[in-house]
Image (tube, rainbow, N blue to C red; front, side, top):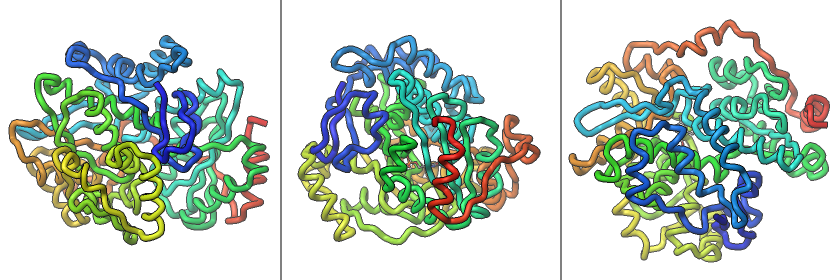
Length: 469
Ligand SMILES: *Cc1c(COP(=O)(O)O)cnc(C)c1O
């Protein structure tokens, strides 16, 4: 299996290199040169299997190199089992039936209560494994406005080959979010509370990346949302959900609350592998660039507005480029030119010849905060279920866009309601409890270092703190 860049001008790489590279050198994203296929028999053979067993079967073909897999089968199986043993539900991603044809798949039983754990718990282990095999060490430095920081920290904690520093804007993340990061008791985890805004944190990380002497000295890296391995790990639960509801003998649809398009793209990947899933319904909040794109074929950048579903407050969905690559007939040069124009003009239109195919597979709808709260309240009245604002957008989109009652729809629940207690209480009158493993979150001691918004001070702190000297 080789991976090629969506911009067509970077070398094709094998899995291990794609894992460590993140972004391709030509600014593109890596995608498989050809998709491994899941035959009808192979899908049928997954029935009744555990999450970890299905995960190994679905992902293994993505790891195999030209000269045989570099990550051994036994090692890979052990990493998958270990990653998903950390989840608080035996089914890992349990399904709950909402009505005759609508299901909720809970992707939030990992350590930080959000779906990013599903991919990152595995990716952290893969990263550490490949680095150790190469006798390399890295320093991961990232910025967070709240949610991704804790998922990255939990994924990298206690890993020998990694030191991780996460910057958050001091006093500007919620108490739950801060405590999820600062109460991690691990020698390779460093929290920096920066005296500034989230943008200052991001600028600081960029400045460190652009300081080549510093970057090389600490072997700086990132675990960002465009990493191919995250997409790969997310394909698994589409297969698990579809098989549980009758695939390959029945078509299944999914509804996905979307931001960077990584989650939906994984569903598209499962379909490219041969799983009969359709429609793929995309739910947006008031930042509706994706919903507008899928309804009009035109993409236009607008201002980002804060919403009740902050993990979907984005301007440009980075993973959409992977789908666009296919819409441009996998012509990297044509896509590179289109993306260049888009950067300049802030607007682009999808190629006409492939739009029909998009319309038959995808549907999309956007919901503002009022509609989100209404969806949360309505589901609570009907079923007694408390859901978070992101998951509510998935449910609302499913209800708005499901067309054929014969096709079951699985709405992906991407965060635990206790991560967004204020919104849940506003919508339902009930305040959700934190799950048992976080029940003492407010009693645990915190570790963080407050630093001024000053590049030299932050660099000095990284150099003095890291273990990988
Ligand atoms: C990241 C995130 C999303 C958006 O997922 P994408 O892959 O970026 O589309 C939705 N809900 C929650 C809770 C998230 O953390």
